Image 1 (spheres, rainbow, N blue to C red):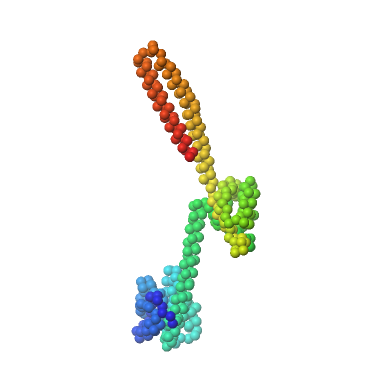
Image 2: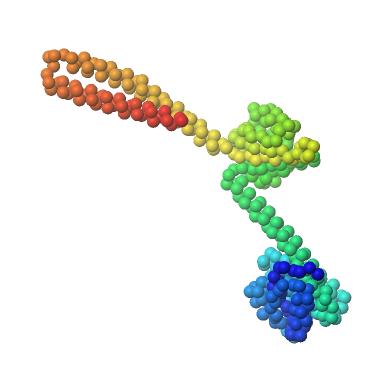
Length: 344
C-alpha cells in the first residue's frame, strides 16, 4: 500500500468505541494521514456533514437510533446539494449478500466486514480515486455549462453567432446567436451550407463562396464582410471570421466561423461620413464664399484710408473696421482648421 500524502477528513458513523479504535488503527497501518470525527446519531451526522465536511464516510450498519441506509440517504442529499461525489463505505459485522448488493445499489462505494479490516485502506484509496475522477468530470461539466451560458449571453448582447461545419460528415451546427442573426428562433430550421448561402445577399454570394473555397483548400483563416437578408427581409451587414482545422495530412476536418452583426456600426459610419462631408462643405463655404467678400471689403477700406480729405474720425473708424475684419479672418481660418481635423 502506498503512502497517502493527502490529509483526509474521515467521518466515522459508529456506536462502539472499540470498533472505532480498530478502524483508526487500521488506517494508520495503511499509512493514511487522517483526522476523524465519530458520531452515532442522526443530528450529529447531519451537523458533521456541514461543519466537518468529510472526504469519506465509514459507516456501521445498525445503531440504536440510526442506521447506514438512513445515513446513505442523507449523504446523497448532501452530495446533490454540494454537487460533489463523497465516498461512503459500509464497515459492519456479518451481513447477507443481498443486503450488501442493496447498499451498493443505494450508492455505497464498498462494504467491509469488521473481521476483515485489512482491506479497508485499499478500499478507501479506490473509493477516493473514483470520487476524484467523478468530481473532475462534474467540474468540467459545470465549467462547460457555465461557459455555454456565458457564451449565449455574450452572443445575445454582442449580436454575434458562431457556427461549425464537419467537412467529413457534412453536418453543420449553428449557435443560438446565429439563428437570431438570421432572423430565426433557435433550432427553428435545420442548419446547412445551402441554408447559410441562401441567406447571403445575392450580390455577395459568389465572392463569399470563392473566398471560403480558397480557404478550405489552402488557407488557415479568413475575415470578410458581406450582407445577409434575414427572415424579415432586413438587410444586415456581417463581419465574419472563419478558421479551418486540418489533420496531419492537411485535410480540412472542421470549419468554425464567428459572425457579428455590424449593421449599426455601418450605419454610424455612414452618418459620420455624411457629417464630415457636410462639415467639409461648410469649411469650403467659409474659406471661399465668406473670405472672398471679406477680402474685397478689406481692399476697399484700404483705398478709402488713402484719401487725404478724410477726417481723422473717419480714419480711426476705418482702422477699427480693418482690425475687426482681420480678427474675423483669423476666426474663420481657425474654424477651417478644426473642421479639417474631424476627418483625420
